[in-house]
Amino acid sequence: MCLCLGPAKSGKTFLMKRLQGDDVDDATHTVSTNGINLFIIKNCTGEFDMIVKEIGGNMALIWKHYFDKIRKLIYVVDASNLCQISAAGVLLYSLLVEPRLRTVKIALTLNKMDLSYRQMRNEALLMLQYSRLQKEVTQQLTIFETSGMTGQGIEELRNWLFDPATLKAAIDANK
Image 1 (cartoon, helix red, strand yellow):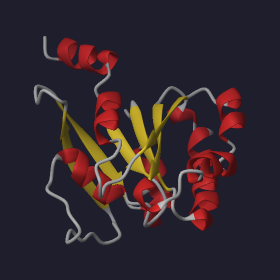
Image 2 (spheres, one colour; image 1 turned 180 degrees about the vertical axis):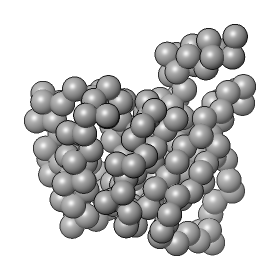
Image 3 (cartoon, one colour; image 1 turned 135 degrees about the horizontal axis):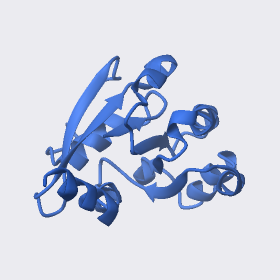
């Protein structure tokens, strides 16, 4: 199972819709998630699928109730909003110290890259103190630059979800 978390308005729903294969364009509209959305994501061949639970950013206080049996976590940050990056960092740190998430693989997803300037990636990582995180946390962190609008980084994120170890576990579970 995979969770998709991040602050409100970071673009989690839109990103998951794109990853699920829904048609999205300028007219696609989403509202802040006040609850849970379930998305079925297929690997690139369509042979395997995974359920991703997206939990609204406004529900951060109860995220901890969904940490059992989680192997992967997609953490979405709106990279175009410098004010949100600091708040996103606080929420991220609260996840990283959670004992039940000690072995979880985390996709640190810098979203809305189509709205940010090129240097924004470095500024976001600096504000999140990424170099310090790499040294101090037990989790494996992978950075993705994405855009739900343009589709940038979607296939890379899909490949991360369905890495060889995950596919092997799925095959072994079906034997």
